[in-house]
Image 1 (cartoon, rainbow, N blue to C red):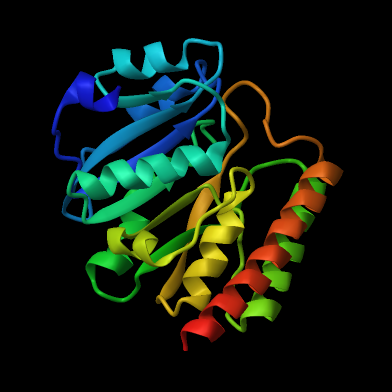
Image 2: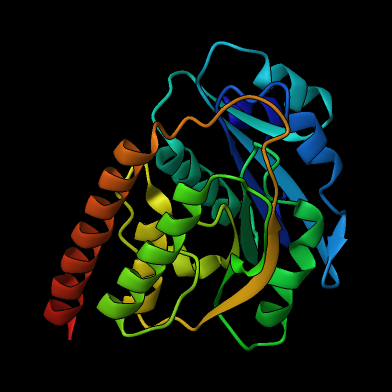
Length: 246
């Protein structure tokens, strides 16, 4: 579908992958804030619409943005894997990710790209803990700190925000990772990066309240339980995998 619509387009130098599931009321504003250039590099947004029944795809494509539409909803992790593949196949040197709900500001993209461009890191995580969190949910805020502490303990690398929806990395990083999670994929990506030995940096960013709509992650207890399982499973799997390869 993507090839039939756009042909062999070039998505470099930076491909900003935006997974979107039923975000028709937020996606246009998010795309308006995507810079054309960041850290001296050309930025090309790519919206991956993860199924759904609203007008997300129509709104995104109507802005002139490259839009890949999945026939069914498979989860954010699956949408991102498709985005990574398209970015790699079409020449992106760097891949960035931002959520489609408007909580993270793509205008801050240069902050994440600068350590990559300067050769100081391979993977840069945006951190609301180092920056500013305007989300009013104290339970979620506490969960961010708890999981940051858990991942830091398990990996031996200090991190402050494991579930950020805003990050950037060298495109070849994904070739070295095993990515299986269709949901709660942010910790799988981060833990995989750390245990694979890629250089990690965190940069302060701002997390805002949603522009519109509601979270698709479920209630706090359900989200926290499932997220914790992914953290532990990924750490155990990657630890064993890297041991076998060494």
